[in-house]
Length: 271
Ligand code: NAD
Figure (cartoon, rainbow, N blue to C red):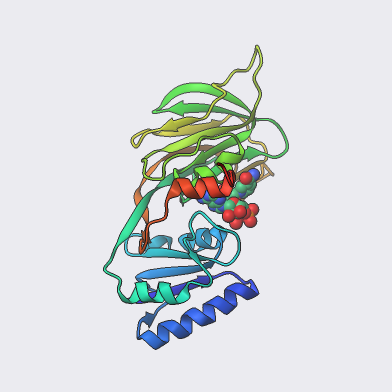
């Protein structure tokens, strides 16, 4: 089995990376950054998000494992002092895995170009200079006209991230679908949106058609694209979203209870 290691720049991540490399060498497992079977990320959720995009063309064959060197993360199950246990699990690996849904996004620009992305957490569209105005289509039918700061479209596993901060619901990571949450929508007698988050099923197609060519920022996880309507530059026309045919796979060497993690992270010592 070939192991790839992907770490962030912190001193602690580099220390853990060296420890893990030495242990992998000692056990005779192969170290391969180019075509690994298992990718171990060392850092936090952000490091795992970066590794996911780094290996995006090999998602079908890679399983991820996250070691966290700071606070407990949602994609990082192992602690930095558990390297021996993790290496034992790698040696005894029998291909066990768990997988979660991802979000496909297709952006269409004013010059006719189309770009496709896959999000693990979410995509957001915001207008950073004016109120964002867009038409929201569900399965090609106009649903509402949105006015406000922006919209957040998240996966089930991303629902505990940005989505939660903007009032979205937390989704069971085993559910297949995605969520639309509003960011500060303008609601009055003239402009009206649903005003609550919507959870879509596996077959729904969501499309956002922007009403103007202003200064939009579109994100896909950690990546930000600023789409300024400067002369001669393309601007964003519409973005469509649906559940991806691809999934992310994690090597599941032990069970972690998702709802305990939600409780630990957001509630603390409930009695
Ligand atoms: P960052 O350094 O700003 O950290 C964001 C925080 O989100 C970290 O504490 C991270 O552990 C946590 N996080 C990431 N994915 C998570 C998940 N699936 N569930 C629960 N918590 C999660 O940014 P980063 O480390 O580069 O991570 C990028 C992510 O940050 C984005 O995908 C987005 O979800 C999130 N973000 C959140 C807000 C917000 O809540 N207002 C704003 C911008 C970005």
